[in-house]
Length: 91
Image 1 (cartoon, helix red, strand yellow):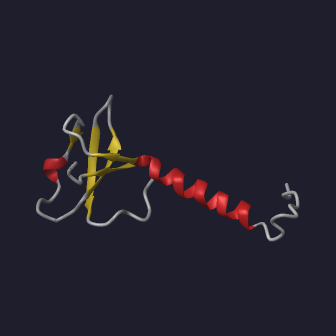
Image 2 (cartoon, rainbow, N blue to C red):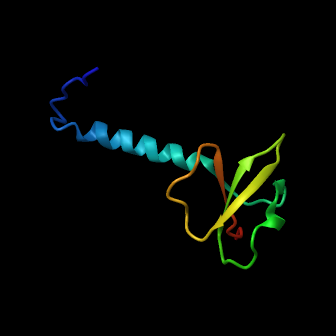
């Protein structure tokens, strides 16, 4: 369906920007801050001392999270179902 012409936005930039913001905002809903109460499994099998700030996990059974890998920088692309745990210490 073609979008309706808006005389205040003849190039359609506002609509394109809104779609981009919605797309980007949807990717950040999978970020949670680290908390001691999180039940994260499989961390012991990952390498230690990598200097990584982000832990990529998936949901396990119940409330548990299963660690997949560490990342030093925020991952630019996530697989479906991936969750990023920000391990930055709380102030």
